[in-house]
Length: 543
Image (cartoon, rainbow, N blue to C red; front, side, top):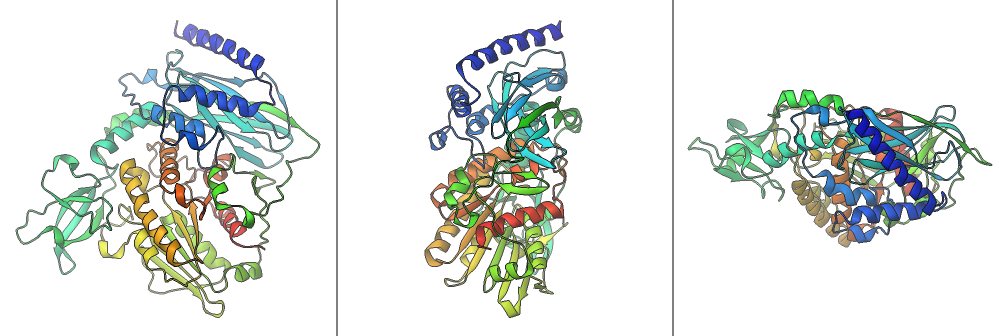
């Protein structure tokens, strides 16, 4: 009986697709995107909907913006057979074609069904779509439109010729999203943190901390927001009569949580469920779409935030940007010439620290001996090249049992330390630490960052600023975290809060680069890091 429901839903949606085929030609892809987006717009709205004009943008698609609030609808579950499963879900090419011309957008229809074979009637599940070409050593990321009724349309662009495979997956179910996000909203974060209070660098008492004041039922709290560089942080007030809130000296990571382990166990099999692959043949006069003529160093910063997706693709194992031509030729001399008399400031977590190490190797700079877990520095004296990496502000999960809070500053603090005339390049990255906290708390971090950037641009006209967006990771150290879902909210916050500065900040898209190659690890491979860094140099230098 259940399977009959799914078949009936499948037939109904097939009729819907036929209507689309009649009203839209394959060439009118942008009309299809706008129509789909407008359909979703009637169901949910967002404050920035009017800023995209129906286009898919490199940081996130307009349909993603429309459906972000849909994803926020919680779907608690008692029966896990009602969760979307790849076992009964259907996928097919929208226009029932197997051949596509080079440069066309390919549309895929996806109908989600649950474990009973019943068609799912509401949206909110987060899907991925990408395409690979084995013989071409090629890959490209796509995006998915949520129609808010259990049906989805995947979009992926034909950028090379030959046989290719379209792949899709149910990345995060709404039940997984609900499980984790409800916990975050209740406690402020996934993991608990402890604050250490004491005298003369000796901890006497530890209390529970969070980015929200009513954490874990505590009522008598120390508001440490000001001490945390105006980023919200609250810790239980110490009970020791000799200690006050001003005696906060350390932070302690606790890599545990109180999410029901049985619920995590039940949700885990539904994360990144692959659907049936589809084989297509792409034809054209050339083997690959032509490279753009605009050099990346001439591309406007604003365009990196609003350009059409995908931002780029791999072909012959080489990452190629679509909106500009990376004319930077890697060589020892070109790296040295590009960075001569410059200071690079890397701000963020270990995934921007890897960029620091890569640039340090490329320039053969010498690392300072007094580096710490939260701070690294290197220099090339003869070329006057200096570089610094610093961890972003708390919450920062260092992996250490204890660290002194004086050792970790905010990104805004580091920006304020840049002198007026220093020829500085700033690279900023937030992802895997901040998706563990409430979106509201992360928005406050970005607003603090914005103030630091505005002051930097006012006093230092030579400064160049880049923001590295999130990258894909399937098997992160937090396998139950809905990363694909959280990434949408993170990028949306970055876009909204930094909108008036986008003409001065280059956005570096890491999601498209890593999703197409099916990156697994939280820390991408050296090859992938090198490709990301090469994008940076393409925007930064002429050759």
